Amino acid sequence: MPRQDEFQTLPMRSGGRKVRFNPGAWVTVALIIAIAVFAVLIIKDAVKKDDPDAPMQITDLYGNPYTPVTPTPTPPLRPQSEGEGLLPVFFSANTQEAVVAVTVQNADAKAIDTLLETCGPLDAHITFFMKGEELQALPESVAIAYLSGHEIESRGMNAGNLSSLQDEALANELDAPGQLMNAIAPGYAFHFLRTDNFSDDSDRRLSAYLAQRGYKGICRWALNEPRSFEQVAPGQIINFDLSNVKADRIVYVIKYLYESSYRVVSLNELFDYEPNLVD
Image (cartoon, rainbow, N blue to C red; front, side):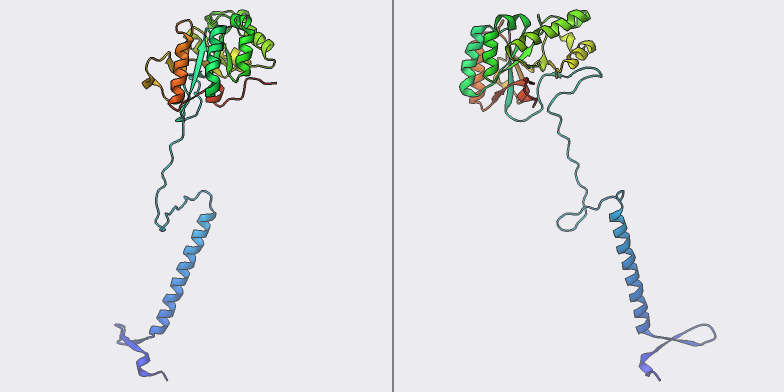
């Protein structure tokens, strides 16, 4: 017989009978239910972790949930084409590194010698844009510039309006400078074209011809013969036309950039392209 204090009685309204209540049994039942609920939660959590489509629960070092911040994508180093069928037009590179590309056009032998003499001790690399007639007239200067680590790029045969030419003339305008450059440096392939007409930048036929010949795009500039160094910013293409300015001014700019902790690099270096020599 159970002891009297082992049971409690609860009054019931049905017939005035009393129901005996066992606290220990109810505690056991509650404990079993709690364990069952806990087990279900564990199983659901395991299933969620195995589900690749389930949202990830992210917590901090203290176990508190938080919403991660999606990082802003870094814009590409190189420019994108502005339309289907067009090659990119290069003005500057997206970089915060203190580098700029100095491009020079209409250079003669004396100017090339002056610039190479300046660039050597500073480890500066210039990109020379040469017309076909200049490649014909200055093969030794071009060869020395290339062998000294500088970049040679094309202005076509005459740097004129290429988009206005018929197909055969356009092909010759692009191919003849390449043949002349290959006579100086066998296996050399141009990466950039510059002409005197900005309408060439949006001509799809010209872009198709250039793409067939392995060009990366058309090169312009962010600064043209800058008069203030406050305009200079990382990644810019800075252009000088030696038909307008003397080589001494370019020398001054290159030395100033060096003293300001800027590196002067070629276009290939600025945009992380492979060297022009393909063989």
